[in-house]
Length: 372
Ligand SMILES: CC(C)(COP(=O)(O)OP(=O)(O)OC[C@H]1O[C@@H](n2cnc3c(N)ncnc32)[C@H](O)[C@@H]1OP(=O)(O)O)[C@@H](O)C(=O)NCCC(=O)NCCS
Image 1 (cartoon, protein in one colour):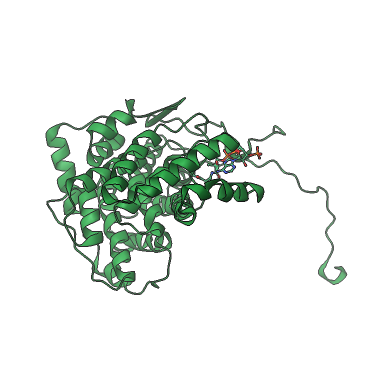
Image 2 (tube, protein in one colour):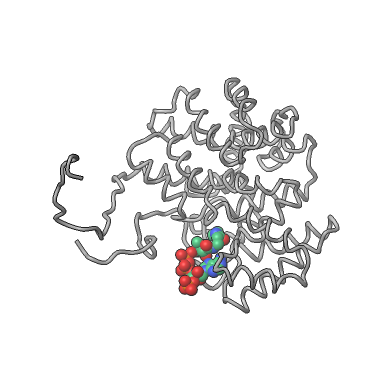
């Protein structure tokens, strides 16, 4: 075995995939530029694209949208379980637990056949927004709002969160964020999902693995932390001092840097503009100005670029999501990509089992318990 290894698996091509291409500063789902998708497509269209490899025709899109709506209700047992989750639990911990519980009530959970996997894909995607909004309402001691059959996934999410039908601007803003978050090649949570799927574990197990991995601050947890930093700084004049302090303490600036994009994250310009429009309309442009000042200062000091998690936070904030829910909104979107990867892994499966470069001692003599 080679004595060198790739720390963090950087640059390692661990699987072959036809889902997402990242080339320089370009991101494509199934070959289509994500900026075009964000502008012209809905999340549901992108889900179809990711799962089936091409954009849907009208009938196909209508069918998928209908199936998502018809499959969004969660089992009564899981509804009751929500009431037993401590209100102070982090939404990602609640989502991970509740999502895992869904498997217990799905009679096809352990059926890895293609047809069963297709049906489960819809059920899993459709129920994510219901779980995360129902938990949010539970912790605010408010009754859960049932999804409506005439609303898109983005609209239903906002409807179930606030109990009011959202306006078109809000729906488009969330939908765009969902499109941009839907998929991102072999990021940590997707890789984790594929590792689980490759053992022939069921789809629920693979997605539970992914949710657990996304929770971390270096991955999905970054959008919450980035927004908290913005709120803490609060004023453009405070930016240099705050950032200097973080850097002096060798702390990471959340929402900055990227393993793959070193020059710029192609999702950022779209989210940045959207965040600006939203916060301006709501009268708190000041947070946008702080964000912009952080971006400029961090680049000046460290040449680091903002990633998707930096500006998505402003969008979610403007849409009324509490900051600690941001990662679960990311999870809801990324479920589309996780499922696409599980389905692809099934097509040509091989157990994913790398090796470690051993760095411990060798030939250590065994000493019996009495002599230790
Ligand atoms: C995303 C991330 C994990 C990528 O990590 P990585 O590929 O291992 O990055 P590297 O360690 O190669 O970074 C290169 C250098 O930039 C520094 N760096 C990277 N991101 C940084 C950040 N957000 N704040 C401060 N310094 C950072 C590293 O410490 C390293 O410095 P060094 O060479 O002096 O040790 C990392 O940028 C990070 O932790 N960002 C903050 C969390 C975040 O926003 N995550 C969401 C990602 S979409």
